[in-house]
Figure 1 (cartoon, rainbow, N blue to C red):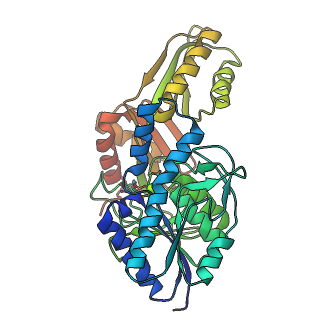
Figure 2: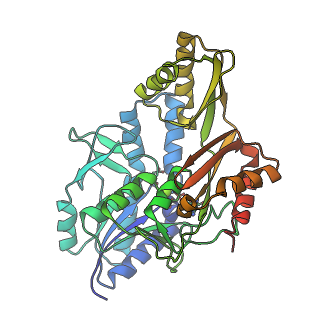
Figure 3: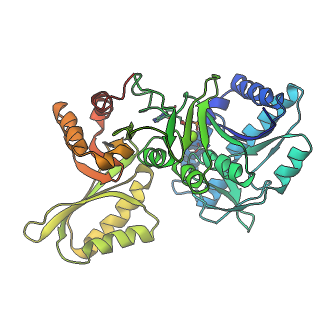
Length: 406
Ligand code: ADP
Ligand code: ASP
Ligand code: MG
């Protein structure tokens, strides 16, 4: 086997404590011993990012996004330095860098910045000098030298973007499960590891709540055709390949079940039923940077209707404020929030050519006496909003009924 350039990313749980950092160091060094060049992307230790967000909230309920990025980027800076030290301790050369140092240039949309370009010269130079390069995930810098972050789970994006930029031979994402499963293995122990999955399916799963890969990282991987290997940092087995096309004789109808408990349902009651009203509501929300998900408008009676939609829970205080203001302006009634909802979805490319999939999903929920509050579909997925207390039952029974178990 020839010498390769491998990008490896280790998630927060893989570096949660001293022992695990040492374990990652050993793993990285084992590849170095085979003469490969390595660029290692690391996330913040364990739950550091969540803890920093909580800390900020204690100081200011509405912290400035620029300062949030300043704060959150420190998490990854700790990990890279510690991993470099752990590798040194094993007698190998390594050097750590922040996102800014390795020229990950982003736009200035703080907390969700987009990568504009990467000036990878510093990385290439360090590799040439025989060093294992360790890069802080999840962060970049604007042309104005302001530190930015790439959205939650953004270290995945750092890894994929670097793999593309450096024309790496492999991009490995190390995490705390053995790969991509037919559903979250923490909810359904019977879930099966998938050997190969397409970018499209993975992207759909990510956007519907499977946080194992950040959705944006899959978009970039798909755009530049970067194959990703998702695998366990605790075991040697191969994991799941995320690739363009999966060689199967026939598409599986449903390949995975996902769950998202991170959304809230907002309902505007008694909305006047005439043209332009929905435009007013959603334009105001969009203008304030709120991205709305599932939208349902009931059939109007007496020229009034209810409009419901879902938003990410983190955006719900802002959404409520804006929506109440607009509701008043357009002469609508109350605005209600239901935070106890969950979205359960089935995903599969084979769905396109198979009728009856939706019916089967609804039937499974009905048998379990689970009420469906909203439904939405795409080419390759069907989602239902249900009450959160039924979420696990829904996932398990759909997983079982669509034949996904071991
Ligand atoms: P990391 O810290 O390595 O980035 P994450 O917590 O972001 O890890 O993602 C890994 C977690 O994703 C797993 O622990 C698992 O509970 C969850 N997960 C959700 N859906 C799936 C799925 N379909 N396959 C694998 N893991 C999943
Ligand atoms: N530490 C960041 C987060 O928790 C980035 C990552 O883990 O990928 O979102
Ligand atoms: Mg992650």
